[in-house]
Image (cartoon, rainbow, N blue to C red; front, side, top):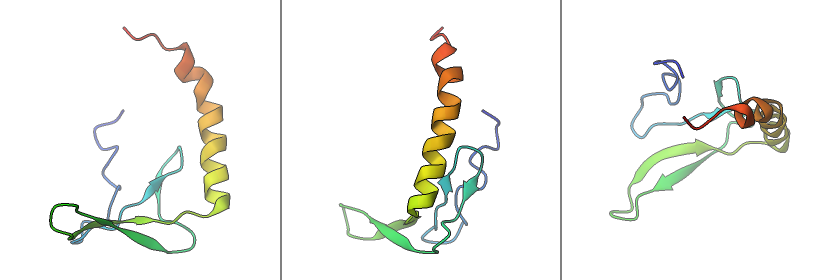
Amino acid sequence: MPANFFEDLHDEKTPPFYKWFDGVSWRQSANGNYIPVISPVDNSTLGKIPVVTHEEIDEAIKSARKAQPAWAAKTLL
């Protein structure tokens, strides 16, 4: 994993708006909708995560299925 892998994960605002990983890159959802991540400690908003579309979910599943054989071939040590 490259050192800068998480560089584009969020927009660095407070609270941050996070992106989702499609198997290739960090992306914003096509619909532009987000839901808040709420702290159970103080009820503050820790960040916002994208609400992905059905098409985006299908894309991510296809990417995962494509990558799975290479991951399965890796040894633990």
